[in-house]
Image: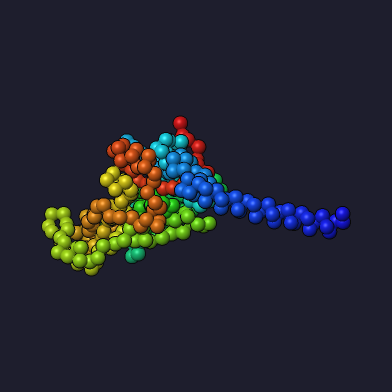
Length: 334
């Protein structure tokens, strides 16, 4: 038999075998009715069942415990796998950990500037009164790649005024980390200091960190919600409803809903003496509880086992974020 005859025979054998296999499946379905159909559907079903998927899933849960922030890694059944000090946000390229420190900068000594003025200087020179001071720094660092991101305020060094920075990690919505940053500054000899605050929302879901608006995480209320609102300390201050600005979010776990919700912080313009100290100078604030978070950012609700654990815990939960499979968890702390 020639090589060509053999190849043709092989092809005829393969075609016949496939025909028999297809016919066999059809006959089995005909013979078995619903049972056979069920067998075929079962064979096509995903390999992982719901329980297995939950056991294989990982979630970064940030809580405040005895005044200290900690991020714990759980599976979907509620079993803990790691605990990391501070805020840790899972991203596409790894786990982003918030890290704080200090650095030395030169700042004017306002006492020195006052002496210049007392000595009759027509225009004091703050740069002639510089002294070293420690100021706060903060950054997100990727424990997998070593990449880091820091707010601009952590690198600035103005030498014409006294200033300090405070940064407070708040939590996370999905792969978006939330840190509130305030800069307190004073021009020596001015009437009063000033404070400027901002909540930074950093999205780590892509190849590079990207800053997003707080309103993208939880939709702001309309002006009609604030009509007739009065705010203030000793005397009521009537604010303009249209001036309401959503400036910050504080995520928290809602046991009834079984998901994260947000406390929204709104600021309104006011006179300096009317400021309530809750946000920037020249503002007064109000808060709105239990506002929904954008599900596209936060992700789907975690599996039932983890929901049950968080709802029964009574913990102060600040984040429940799915951990991508490629993100490597930071080792547990002692």
